[in-house]
Length: 164
Image 1 (spheres, one colour):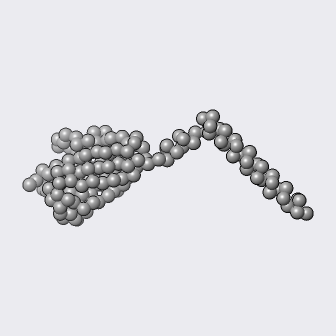
Image 2: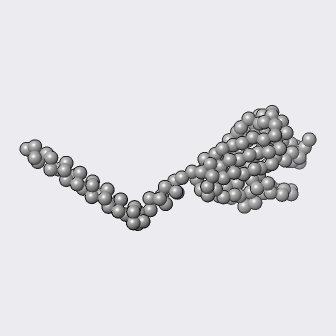
Image 3: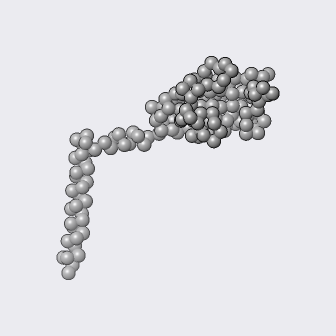
């Protein structure tokens, strides 16, 4: 009776070993794309440095977008972050999978969780976008602010204050 109990276990172990050998052989031969799957799941560190911060009041608010359709739309950011403002510059480290991204940020000096604007909609708090695009009378497009993350990446963006 003990022999019958052991046979199924030994069969299971043998089957498991055969599967393991097959997987190892496929990995070594390159037919099993384990390294590709591991790369697709890998995240990279994005280091964002925001420069030209006028004061240490409030926070620097970041929105990281991965889609042109949702760029600059409230609630459409992939990730939102806030860090304490420091006169001069601050750094933000974010873990992201490979992809195309754009950043919008502003200096929320009064901590009211929004970019304050004047009568004509002109921002009265500092703001900036990745790639530091030239701004005219419109915000940049996703493509103008877009950068690619394929490895650990660093980017510097400079706050602009339109009102003294």
